[in-house]
Amino acid sequence: EAQVTQNPRYLITVTGKKLTVTCSQNMNHEYMSWYRQDPGLGLRQIYYSMNVEVTDKGDVPEGYKVSRKEKRNFPLILESPSPNQTSLYFCASSLVGLGGNQIYEQYFGPGTRLTVT
Amino acid sequence: AQKITQTQPGMFVQEKEAVTLDCTYDTSDPSYGLFWYKQPSSGEMIFLIYQGSYDQQNATEGRYSLNFQKARKSANLVISASQLGDSAMYFCAINEGTALIFGKGTTLSVSS
Image 1 (cartoon, chains in turn blue, brown):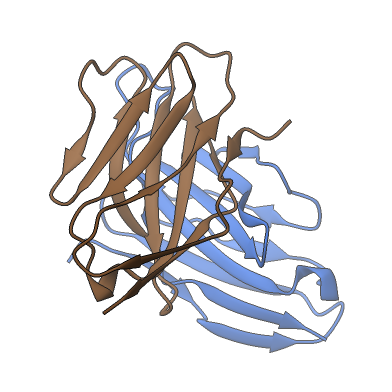
Image 2: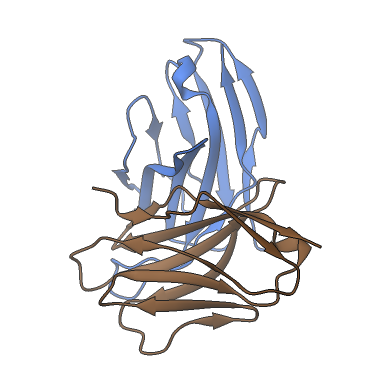
């Protein structure tokens, strides 16, 4: 089954304790992305990756890191989480157009609800 | 400036009626794509429909259609024959190249 998986689905942690949220897709998609969703703000892009070893900042990258060492995986790292990073996080993936600069519909993971106290 | 504007925080419709969810966008890029996603209360994001900026015809997918008015920069989602299961949050999004920007969403409530 084609899917994007995220782990963990729920996480409660304390300020400053490093954490990683994993994301994996089995559709051989070049493009992967992380979003956070907050009430009244919709989804905001954190980081995205066009392919292995290629990552770029989205709208709200501060406080986050990513890596893309393999095509299927795109982990999100919070080196020193703070309470303002309490949010619902989504990973997504999609194909890239032939020109290399156009993405198509994104397939989303189930979401990770993170609470930082 | 906001890239995507969804002016209706909440919409209410009765079963079997049609409903239009508004979306306007702002871009100077001639090549872009417009997407609509549905997010039910369970939280997952479900892709509904896509419209490319060069597409001549309005996109349709089953009961969903996109009323694309390029000159007005609007991409409204039309849901025909609403069902109770359509109750959800709906997001409009635009991609310019490799970035995808979402609007703040419209909550649709369908009643029997």
